[in-house]
Image (tube, rainbow, N blue to C red):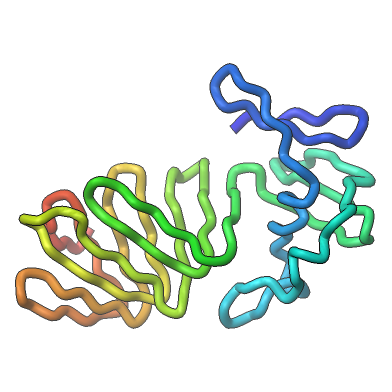
Amino acid sequence: MKIELEQNNKVFVFEGPNKLELHPIWLRERVSEKEHLDKNTEQRLFDPSVLKDIKINKVNITNKLLDIEFSDGVKSKIDINKISFLDNVSIDSKYISISASSAVYDDKNKVINMSGAPSKITSNKENNIFYGLADKILFFNNERVHLIGNATMEYEGISITSNLIIFNPITGNISTE
């Protein structure tokens, strides 16, 4: 992901030929330091609706981290290879639907790490019916899915429970990796 900083403390990302500004409030909502998140659920400990006039006071890129100081005094380091999404995240494709409390997209490893209490995955194909729950779901760009922690999956009338279930949502095949 290409990121550009401008002298007026604006942050831009490039999506193909398009240059898009990352709004200061959007960035502020994604601070991930432990003092801003619940240690068990990774949910925000602040109400984003009160972030009305947030500005970026300082911004730098150091060691692939976006080092930001906001006008409310909060300082954060955001990994530019990872983008976080909080509060009721969902992914829908022609093969699956996944819902979770939060997600982090890791651009370097091309994986979406979804967490919830629990995270849920269901099939969107009529001839490949499955349903699963887990503390965490890893969704890879090659459509390989890992259900991690208290994982349960119903597939073709069989119930599977494990700390780790790996499967292909297109074929339904379960593997050990």
